[in-house]
Image (cartoon, rainbow, N blue to C red; front, side, top):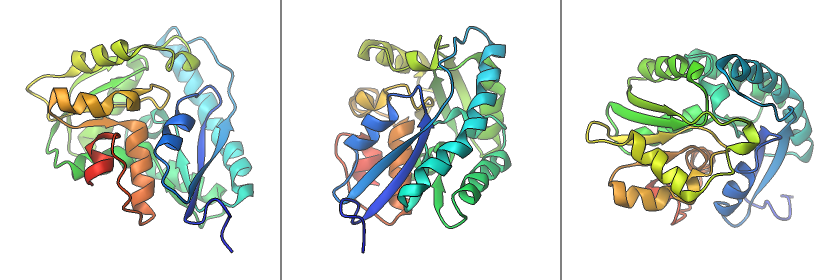
Length: 251
């Protein structure tokens, strides 16, 4: 017998303990019969003032994935979702991301599918027919730029522009206004890019992405929307969710 509330699907979502964005955004996109069970990757809410600080924080986050997976699989989810995007491009290659996915799958018992934000973003770009040129905004520090560029270059894309918002703490990424997010998108837009991509699962871009697609007239790939879309479509669900960009309402 299926879980009473998750009679269609139960997603286990692993996200950092400082993240207050993934849970509400994915719950807003949740179809009937699907539940999201969130496990926290415990790390201190460190101050991040430099590239070195950011790199040290990445090490702590990598170490926290396993225990969070151990925690969430006790409720028997059907599918695992990683609710942090920086780790999926930190290695700079698709092979590094694939290893991360394999490690999570193994930790989950070996029989659960795993959705990573990097896979979701690539699938979203393909769905939109984006051929080459993208621009990226994220809340990180410049140390991640060559890693992001290396990852997307390997996947056949050119990163025309990238904006580092340099959030001072992971918990501060979500403490921003809509105008701040609008200006972040405007700062990377231009006629030379086909789509705008947002990394940073604690940056609440889903709140404006749908409207932004209309006034910018190009795809906005907001990471939490793309990740949840990918998990749904990978599970065979075709539910369309208006209000969460063309990705959720058309593809």
